[in-house]
Image 1 (tube, helix red, strand yellow):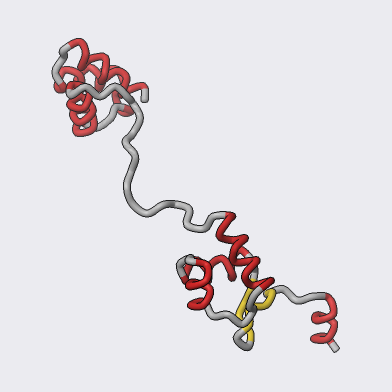
Image 2 (tube, rainbow, N blue to C red):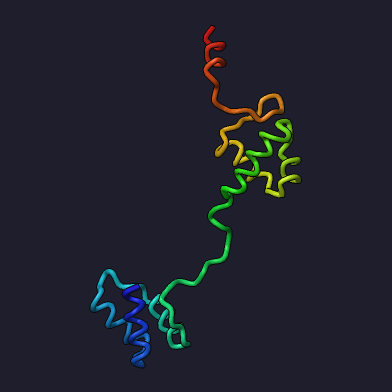
Length: 132
């Protein structure tokens, strides 16, 4: 951010991108932004850009599973149909099938046993039954 401020200042003074880059190399040496980055930001500021922040990036969102989605899947499995397939859940909840699968396995700790999603961890009585 600090270097972008310097670029903006030099652009407003009317200095060229080359002059700006050379002066920044003297001040920041190894820490200086690359030539291309300096020239790009200089051009943006000359075109009237005021903000120093990066532009929003397009692409895939980072968080696919939301707490609301997890709650919808938890309620569906608990209250409606434990035998429901992922496809049935996808149609009923309007959530992507792989997202539902991830929620069931990673967030809710469920695994599929005999076509039912059940808790992956055993209860105390189940553990005792396995030992005996």
